Image (cartoon, rainbow, N blue to C red):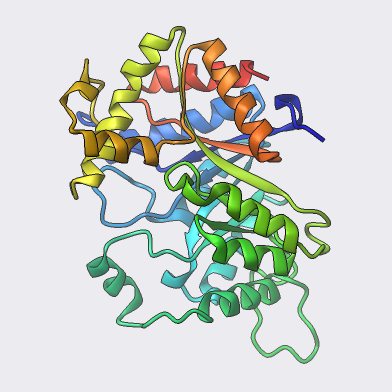
Length: 332
């Protein structure tokens, strides 16, 4: 069955961008304001992403932020998109999210990724020289599922809080590995097409073809990441998106900083290779006025058959970020 936008849930993925001219405290306040707005206009969930050692992103203490956002809202689901599991012991994650689930019952999600979410030096600082193997992530996911499930009489290691909360676990990824694992374990799957869209269609096929139903997820459930910059006109949206363009090009150049203000004719300053890299990175981006946004979202819905879209919306002006979410929601 072909999906329409009315069939698809809309959600928000927030990296808590720190804008040029603003502080971390400002960024945190903007995120709470954005979450409240997303809740008001009918978004399904609000996720925070774990990143480290990046001056322009303030979402490193992900579980803390989940509690901050959940405590400042009343109904929207709040979670991680995701916790980078190799950086943490499963017991610590289970206790943190078990505590959140007890504080905000029925509202907490636990999205898990297997990338470090940082550079090599910071990865070593987080992991204390631990060397990750291919089997560690599947084993840690299984351990987390056990710790969050009902405990058994012979179970020696119990997460408290955590046991019995059954916090919904999602697997996140940008390749086939997590797609295969999510399918085999009957978990919902979120593809990181907001920054690594190259293998989107292949990963979704692998996930759906190999899916085994579970109690948590009786049928395949797919979320895709979508960079969204919406404005009253295509021209204004392209201008506002130049903040994202500048940040992506900075990443391609090995430079990471705060989210810059928009810049006229920024694309004209780029080399052919940089334009190609930007286009690859943002292949799933939807940028434009209301009609362009509706058309772009409908195309993604038709091509992917996704159940949910989760938007990144990095606009320098917080008020225009909220307006962009409004225009996105009005596309339904």
